[in-house]
Image (cartoon, rainbow, N blue to C red; front, side):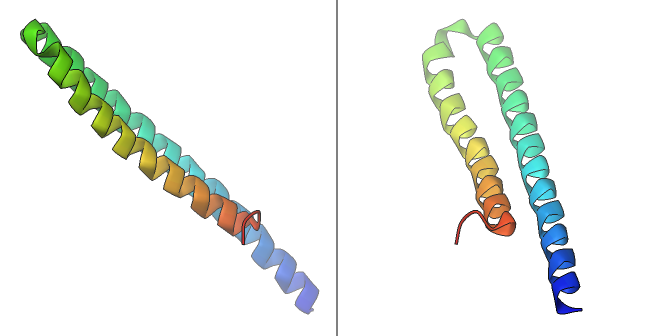
Length: 83
């Protein structure tokens, strides 16, 4: 009976890992997409701020990707690939 429960818990952990990485990827993709749209709108309105705006965009994109990396780490932890 205990081995069957452990299998079920492992299956649920795998499901949780998939959900974690899925939502992490969706969130990062939406965040970077919205940030890119804002960057393009800003540069279209005022082309002279392109250099400064790209710098701020890169900081925002890095923060959005950090959330996806955290989701990956959680998924790896749930699947048992890391300690």
